[in-house]
Length: 100
Image 1 (cartoon, rainbow, N blue to C red):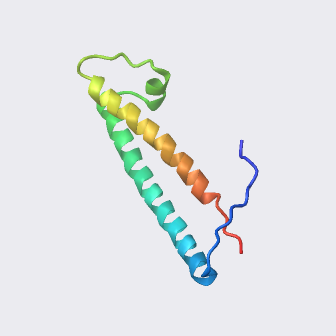
Image 2: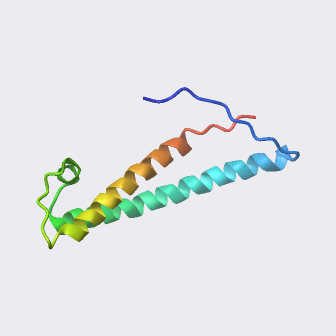
């Protein structure tokens, strides 16, 4: 469910300079989040292959934990949480609309 759009305001005595700066900052942040997401997806793929598990099994909690797989499994769970956060950030960034 997408929330209705809200307007935020930035006050500046230099609007001609601020607008391109804000656009560039949003573009740079979007690139950084996309790059981080790609790296995280690579790490998730490597860990699922190493552990011979699926993401679904990990998220469902059905993977049998052993002394051997505990640390990589914790790492994978962390990467999945990071990915969710990055996906949320990317959705937020790509929905931004600079008005004015």
